[in-house]
Length: 248
Ligand code: PGA
Image (cartoon, rainbow, N blue to C red):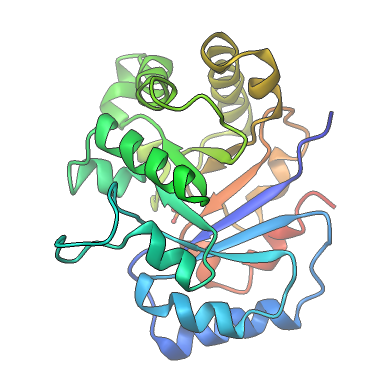
């Protein structure tokens, strides 16, 4: 069974009304392949603008973050109900910049993921090891720990896409090699086979993220367990379209 190729764009805290509009305008003008699912995640302030300006059927708009509770007295947070109110159907959870800088725990990320799914959102769940953990040879242990926090409280993974993003590859220009990514993705899928079952593990898409660009995206083409990408810096540039087309 083929897994649909998926490309996510994580704008992080970058951009202005004008630059977000121009990225979307560029996507609108592009001849995007109908078989590729694309989700772009602009800063929350520009989500509404993005929903209104996006004209591509294969492109959805996603948030970069969501809270683990309903709307209420949670200063600065974004609740799932508000995202749905704007017709946003996707969110990221667990991005390493939130795990490491804001110190979100595995459990908190799992709770946010569960709350988002319960409300009807789809989730790009990010996992991955730091350079130090890589050097200690515990990459798969770290990924397993991050995934297990989620599988402990979530049984249905049909609306989750996993993004494997080694922290040392994010924003550094030093992407994992396609062979290294494939080896880790396979390890992640094998782990999921044991925890969420053969069928769900086979169906789930596992994206690679970390310094993906318009040139190196093609190098991952023949990797059986790399089902797409989560793209940071290059999602702000016209080469994002080359990444979307990298499997053609
Ligand atoms: P990058 O970021 O493509 O700029 O390395 C990826 C990410 O953090 O999602």
